[in-house]
Length: 499
Image (cartoon, rainbow, N blue to C red; front, top):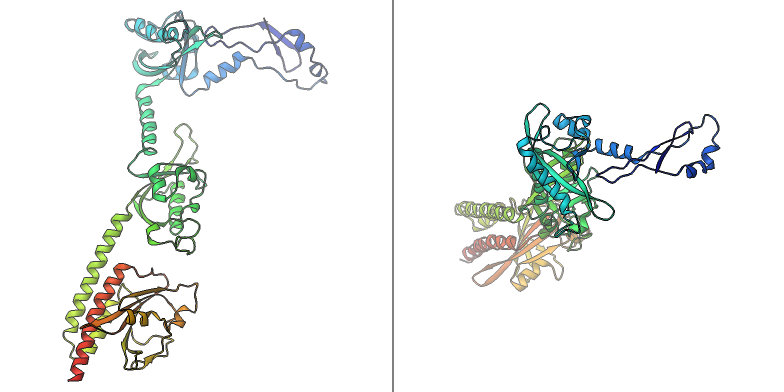
């Protein structure tokens, strides 16, 4: 067969075809008649550049020399047929010194090791013979003590792969190798990546420079309330509501090479379009808020020197339960302290009514913005006797006068039923607070009946404004504790007044 190559000037150069004894790759060949019969090449004007064919031998040499791994190949007789530049840089032997050598002993390995290395290499090729029992086995990993050109021994970790002809018969093997320690480090890194993205005890999410999810493990997806498949390729804004700005800021600083030095606590609200309570995005119920203790790592390529990062890794652990338990315990300690301080201060008040008002002042810090104290009047309505903190702006009700609550008002319900009543209006209902004769900034209310000696003496109302969460069951319990002390003081004041 004749190898035909069209030169840049339009001429055709022929040479005998060559065949790689191991890799089975022939040069690009064509019959001379086929090349000369292509009229477009012959019709090029003088000075035009004609296309040229690149032989498979040249392409193969370029591919082998461009490999990041060191590479050599031997045929079934043990003769070296290929040797790339990476192998030269690693061991010092040039391709001219290596290619054509019959065996590896005395140069690539010690004579004492040559027989064993040859056996391990060629047994991979013989195992590829489909006619042999157990034939057709693919690549195998071996460790060989190779010799550097200066005589030093280096342990190499090699992947040996058989080469077959068109009928499946073995032609030889090729061996891609690198330093064993470097290979082990790489394998450890890969194993670490697989482990972190597998069943790691913490969540791992990888984001590209556009802050889109490219990989996520099961624990991270569970913490964010979605499946791993749903997150791939999507921006984080699709899954996070409140707290997204802090998360994206940390990721952007990480991509810029300035990740947080210490783990940070991020409170994120999981989003599902609209919250389960019908509120806007990012204002879902408390059970959708997560405290994630987070760390951030910049990802760079280990094979190129390009400073552009591949993305950022977000590693976190869901500490929501522990944080809520801790916050609840701290809140309860503070509230118990306030109740104790209020009781000690009320004991020094000569007027029981002043003691009742004092309880309101101590109850408000960290609990509510306003407190309203209404007692049952003789006509059946409610009479305002105290407010905390003082007279509220924009209100027309003075202390000692009846409060004109409309029918069905939460305070009236608490008095009639003898149980606490919670109410929430929110900013979407601008007239809600005004209709209830509360301050305009009020958004959440807790009305607790004042009970003493089997009677309901009135209602105690706590109000929260914008930016505060609604009252929960723990808040109701604290409100009832305050109401019991206030009711006892009011009952004592009535008893003393009757005497």
